[in-house]
Length: 242
Image 1 (cartoon, rainbow, N blue to C red):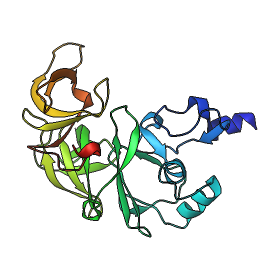
Image 2 (image 1 turned 180 degrees about the vertical axis):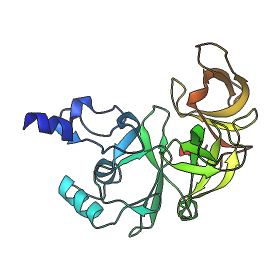
Image 3 (image 1 turned 90 degrees about the vertical axis):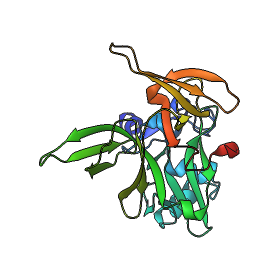
């Protein structure tokens, strides 16, 4: 039984630091189901409902709410209380009319940022890879696990505006100088700035990007940490009114 529990559950003290739970309150917590986001970059749906949104006081109440189909993720009902929610996912509670987007704060913790209801229909997805499949079509692999077939010129690190209900791309933000980027990792996580220079190395060293903030400060970060949000201004609202 102990072996089975270790696979299905997660000890609290081993849970990612961005989870809003007390590591010593109980021994076990919810282990996310396999899905589009890794454990370190996600939050189980039960923890979101009970500990962040606080629409339930106990696990049992949270499971009932989820099982009743009262929580939508990217426009779809999710009844798996272990479903992993990650960066840019949109969570909606139709009964309350509340809509949230999963974003990092400046301490690297995933938070639920309230957004207007009209913004729930789209999310931004980063292209992490692309491949040529049978017939010469291009398949984009997005950061949230989605795959899309396209014909236009897309590159890795570009971001697409994805209509979740129509299941299609409606716009495209190129990863290039002058665009606005959100830092999603490293010591500058949660900061926003303009891409001033992209440094592509021809060695095993990682590619880097020079970022300039609104107060004219500059810093260097890894290319993989930069998620472009728009050409002149972010296409989404951010925590702190950025």
